[in-house]
Image (cartoon, rainbow, N blue to C red):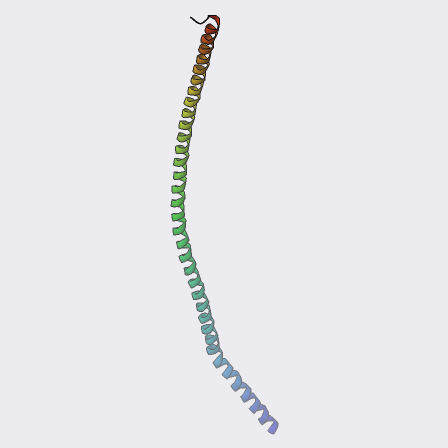
Length: 132
């Protein structure tokens, strides 16, 4: 009989362990699920903070890009205006140089005419004897 009692005691202990594990299974799964969701919430919060920071940085970059674009337009406009002014200056300078060149040609012709006149006067004086 003592063998039967041991078997019954073993069965009772086994039954008690089984029932205890069945009773604790749901709370254990609940705790695992709770801690898992807490961990996931922490990860999601960290990702959300990182995304918010990235959005702030992207917003600042957009603002800076807008200002840079405005400055670029201003620089391009100034460059076009300066190129037009430079072209007007060059055209004016060329016009003045053309006038100077025409004046030089005119002066050269006048010098040549004066030289020819002086040579003619000198030749005429050499031909005729000086009056006494």
